[in-house]
Image (cartoon, rainbow, N blue to C red):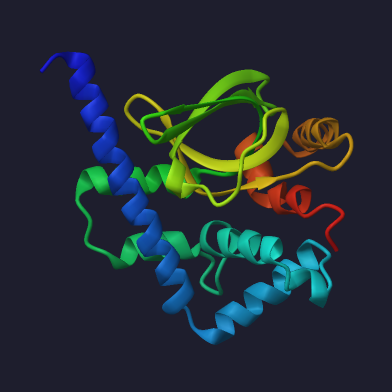
Length: 215
């Protein structure tokens, strides 16, 4: 087996492993978290992102909440649920390293310019507006719940694996007028004022952009 084939094989194994971690962690947050923690999280989410009760009930808000609840909400212990999940499982070192990638991943805004499908897999090629650079993100076709449209802005959580960036969880379309400029301006302002890094900024602010005009 030559090196390129070996790397493709390693990428495929890594995709399966990280998808498995994500699915188990998602179920952990859904089924093994006590009701008091869930109620507390929902109240913080609604207040933080200025959502009324009817807005909270929408499918989109519910999906955004579940992603935020797993990866970004801090429990009473001051930890994320995803971190608690990793701590509660006996994992091999390679799987722990993939978990660490997911631990720091944020929902990033990418304007998708081109879509390619190859052998049941989909590649979203576009511009990451936080960095003004071209990126390609790979997923399986059956992993997408919605149709991806070219020249649209999506927030997506992705991790770099062996040869490709791999999509984790759902993508969220965000198309308020002028949103791209708003995001960049607000990040640069906060970065100037507090020194906040782009990843932390997105972990704190991404839901507000996704759900803008949604309340």
